[in-house]
Length: 439
Image (tube, rainbow, N blue to C red):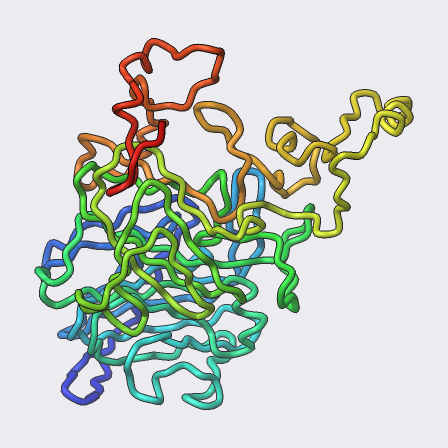
């Protein structure tokens, strides 16, 4: 027999739980555009996916499952985390301003949990702070959260129960509330990802949950370079990038080749007269920032955290600095016992990105990734925005590397200008606006 519950104005029939969708894929899954109900442009979660829903009367229902998961952080490295619906980070929840949502949360963890809806305005008893808002969700049980979405914007969800452990294990996700009016803040491409950090020793699989500051893996959506998917954009698109930070430090996210407008925080949309231009946006702990730009410049453009150690993998923090040291004698001694030994670090660390070195199992080189012109020597929080002509509206497949047109790529000086530079003269050198060319 169906159970009918009257909650405010929502008359709802409970028959069974919504399907608990799950995925084991670490790749970007582009959600379909809605075919019924109000129109909106779904977000594309970098190396993530959006959670399916069902309509039950006038209520949109979702089913989150908190559970142990395996996350492929990069080819060759798996992390044993806690997450939602088969992955960490969890699936993105998408709904529309003004809708009522009912979210079933099933706990398959070995301890109690809860879900806090970070930034959303809702009743106190639905806020998800274990012991304060409601009892913790015991292992093996399902609780129900139900509330109205009173404003649009970018929000997050995460546990507020044994928070240090559960968030360090990867329990987090995005909650996107689209404007009810599709003509408000429209964009052609809408990307989103969460910043997460882990401390996983090379050769191991499980994060050290008591770490507060000394993390060694910095991720976009629990994925590290060189295996973070690119942000693929058609030239002329209006593009939004939403970034949430659930690490324990701030992140100045920098995008090359563009300036952009900061248009949203997790507190709401920024009014046009209050927006400001940036090329880097600092994202505080527990906060979200969204920025927008017009994709006018073709090319492959880096996007990354500008803290240099956040664009490296599995760092050995105790490595001594030996730049300038003469290791030739030591090298000869070591090669007697290990032929082929190669000294590193005496002229910097770039050689780590150029060589294929033996490393512990289940880890990734500290500096890695190859581009069209050689090693990129990055890791961690690094990806590429790829702007091209002729990308179809729902096409997010990797178009490959950009080929720089003749005359637009730096070249080696050999004593004379190459042919492609012969048309340049001192009179045509660009100068700052209002400036004067010297000489």
